[in-house]
Length: 444
Image (cartoon, rainbow, N blue to C red; front, side):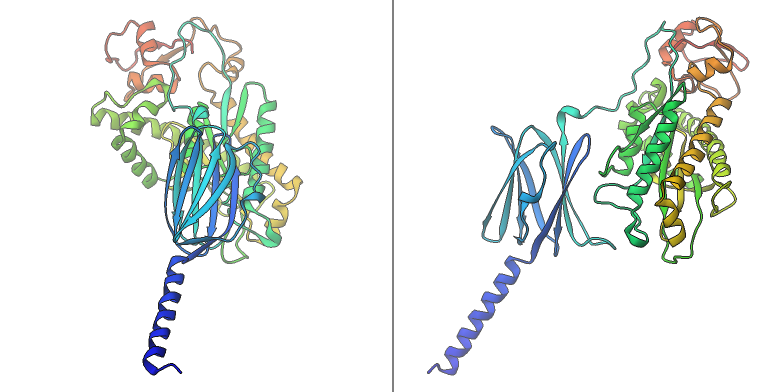
């Protein structure tokens, strides 16, 4: 028989073993999801608890190694379809309390990883993004070649909110915001692309996630004249209903101006060939303020037209265009609006948004507002401006009269021409101009 002392020792050892096991495997990987985007692949590991991880790449052959501490694998990677991704196969192994996941790759990637805490829809997650190096394009504004009399299209960037592992709001019967808004965005693109002189660019073309800053970056890469973000609202009270149109608030504009002035990388990212890098703080602030003011005026104008169109067939949340500091509205040089197509948490509006006919009505309202705005106020050297003027002579009839507060940089930005080209055609050596002076605008 065991003595009381021996019993206590055995009990203590069993307790220690239990504690060790619990701490060694404090979390489990219950599921792995993968999303393919044009420029990256996202892996999402669904966890039962928080983890600590590290990630690194190896060459010859190309591999990505993910080490996760205190986690057990309770799912199978074989269910993932790897077609179209940079991943060839997965390998896993455990050492002590550390799980190693090795991704054998078809090509080199630039990895990024981060952990997410639980929210209303998901528990703990570990996210791994694999960016395709060959498809990455630096964001640069390239001055148009001088001497080319070529008309351009008006470019509209259409942003379907959410996507991928972020479904957005979920309404009755499982209708998801990300699906509804993508269908509306595609219909807006179809209508715009049918219109001569217009071209639409989708920020996301499928079911994958794009970061908020990434959405405006994509719009800038496409040299967009307007950015439209499409969403479907939600509220805890299912009775809330109504569509709405939003533009950037004063507070949002002020905070974004501070960000641009503080971050040097933005200087090479500014429209019209205007760089903030070689400007002093006061001048850079003036340039940004004037550019953002012009963009916000255009945003409100096109937003009001779209609001009026939607009001013809849908209940509006407010009788006017609303203002907020939404991240996607903060491009200083691109007029931007956000359209909430209705409350997906409202059973009736969720039902309507689930129908093709209603989504087409919403898309047509957006398209009609865009078309009306740009036929009223077309950018220089676009096909629409050419047709509206009756066919001006591209070689020599485009001019601009300097107004109070104008600078050469701002004028170049507004007309989407290079600052050097504007100086050259007007024989200007520095930056000095006078109110009332008539400048020739070079062809873009």
